[in-house]
Length: 241
Image (cartoon, rainbow, N blue to C red):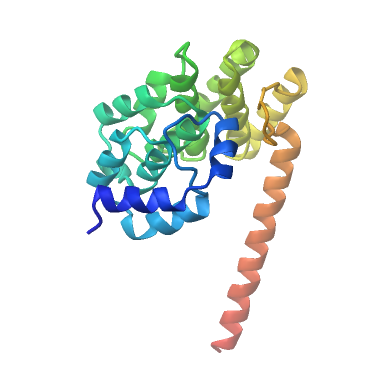
């Protein structure tokens, strides 16, 4: 079993000055080692679902350790108390989206999203909306009517919300459109009214995707994947005859 000291030593060894510069441009703050995502994957793979270690890593305050913590934490064991405590430490979109992705898999996804989406603070609201983006296609979490209500809310608020919240709302519209054809028409109609969503990504190459083209590409990709799987299944069935 890996100890906190072992993992922190591995993270420190894997960090680079160049990655620290890159992560800083994305809002990450010291302390951090600057560990690449491929290295985080390599380090984290044997640690998956080590919830106790994840808690220890988070408490170090180190950016890379917190990203790793959110990768190895067990969503099923995340309590609302811990989720709220970790949220208080979030100070950049990297951690906000990683936390949102983890909590979207937890039993508290809907409750926490409802609690945070309307916050006037950038990071709680960002996490709340990111949870929606991760769960919009799950009918046991959101009804179609509830998603339409969120589309209406986004239309009325998106231009006035904090920078990163606008980005997450944009992602929510895309996710809702992928739920079914009726919601897709609803979102596309909205997109024609609000136009491109303006988000400042600073000195990075990141962009907030245009809604309609992104939806079209995603649907085409899904259709292509489904066709390949169907062809593979037919080929396998013929070989077994």
